[in-house]
Each structure stands twice: as structure tokens, then as C-alpha cells.
Image (cartoon, rainbow, N blue to C red; front, side, top):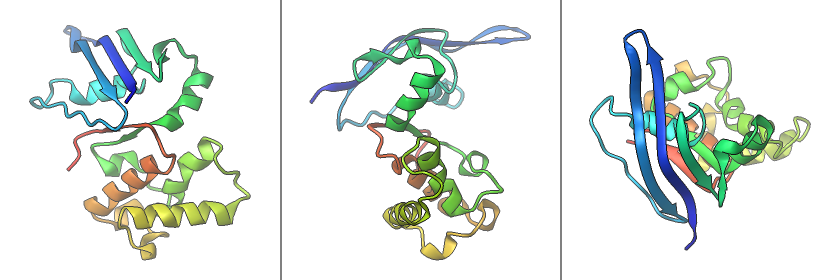
Length: 178
């Protein structure tokens, strides 16, 4: 199988009042299609920052992130937006990653609309895909019009998983999966 992701000497530093915080420093690894990689470390060691830097949710300070043979750190905003359908994240805290004003259906549909998979007027197609994703993650259809605060943590996490899977990504960062 081909290598889908190659991270080379990735660094992410943050400027703080006390100086520079080295959150991620010189990380290198490769990942092939179909492979799973677990990154283990104590709390605060940079695991989440590493995942976010790979996806450019935090801009890396240095290094390379080669995805599908191209260094995505060289992409402009438009090209990175296009690539995001292939690279998704399931956030550690599902409650803070969900918009409290969006229903379950709207949250799952959002990436499909943002990435242009469907147009807003294709309501039947969107709903069919949302229903499919809810079924895939074991989220009952009766929650489709619920809001995040009305659900428990497990159901919120399922929304995040459905949202990430809805675009059929090639690569997913699972930030502290349970």
C-alpha cells in the first residue's frame, strides 16, 4: 500500500509570556493507506497539537506534512480548503466542537455543504446522507432535530464521528478516541 501521509521534522512552537513553548518538536513518521497509528504520551505532551498541526488547524512552525505526495504546508487557503475533504478530525471534546445553534442534522450536513458535495437546495440528498451517517454511527433518527445540549457526551461524540466520516476522508485524526 502507498504511503498516504509523511510527517517530517514537524515543529509547532507557541510564543508565551514566559518565552517559547515547544509543543511539538521534530516529529517524523509515515502512514500507509489503511494503517492506524496511535500516539501515546502524558497529558500536555503535544499529541492534540500534533494532530492539529498536521491538519493545519494550528500552523506548524516548521517541517513538512506530505499528504498524497504533496507538502500541504505550501498550500494557500483555497487549495487547503479543497484538501480538507480528504483530511478530517474527530475532536476530543465533542461539546465544544459543535455549534450549539445547529441541530444534529445541520451539524452533520455542514461539511457536505461547505465542501460543495451538495448544494443547499438539494435537501433530499443531504437528508439521505445525514440519515446514512447517523445510522452508521448508531445515532437514532429521533435525535435529528435535537441540539447538542440536549444530548449526552456519547451521542455528541457520535455527531463528531458522523461529521468526519460524511466526506469519505482518506485520513482522520481521532483526538483522544474513547
